[in-house]
Amino acid sequence: MIVGSAPGFPHGIIDPIEELGELAVSYGICLHVDLCLGGFVLPFARKLGYPIPPFDFTVQGVTSISADVHKYGLAPKGTSIVLYRNHDIRKLAYVTEWSGGLYVSPTIAGSRPGNVIAGAWAAMISLGQEGYLEHTREIMEASKRIQQGVKEIPELFIVGRPDMTIVAFGSNVIDIFEVNDILSSKGWHLSPLQRPNSIHICVTLQHVPVVDEFLNDLKDSVQTVKKNPGPISGGLAPIYGAAGKIPDRGMVSELLVDYMDNAC
Image (cartoon, rainbow, N blue to C red; front, side, top):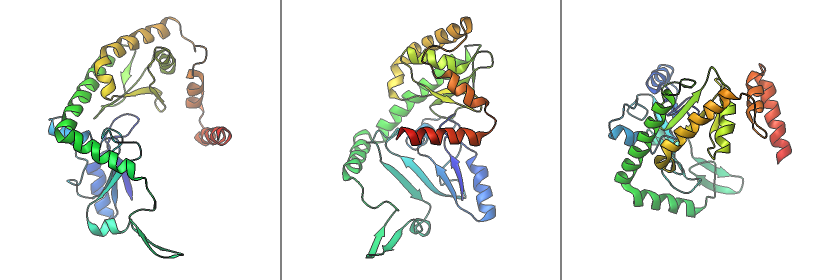
């Protein structure tokens, strides 16, 4: 099986789904599209006229698609769906029988809370297509404004060409993780990334009315680090910076596993 993301969470960039589809067809294997983040944005962004690359069943070779309703679908946490190109492929996901006798489930998971399913239904019925279109328009426009604002800060660069509502940016002249620590002190909590070292903002409806405030704080944070480079007390810049320089990624994985094992 081949898996492609639409988009990938770190940088908001859609994988080349058409090319992956051609590859899947040529080898006679399945292609799954991870649309968990973009499922309730990309279809509506395309309807609104944004240049969205093909990502769905219109692409030959795509056999299944997953989408999270609890992200931009605004449903309760823990509601996701999987779509299949046809019934024959869907049947392969069914789990049948067990040691106690006859049993069948559409997935490995058996019991599920019904309240989140009801919440997802209520969110989708309440918003409808027009609601999702309006939300998508607002967050896509906010994302474009943030992209433009980042481009106007000479010390920063945007990672790739974001297709959706995630904007990742880094710097070749200052420590971007130090910028992130300053932003955190101002109340902005962005996600640090590596390879390349960068940070990203995942734009939601909550960001729409505060885009200008965010960009002003970002500019101030960049200038603060530029004038006074070095980690701030309690900041995470040294940790992310050191992890990014460790050539043996296996060592990084071991450190993370040890941290998780001791934290639980």
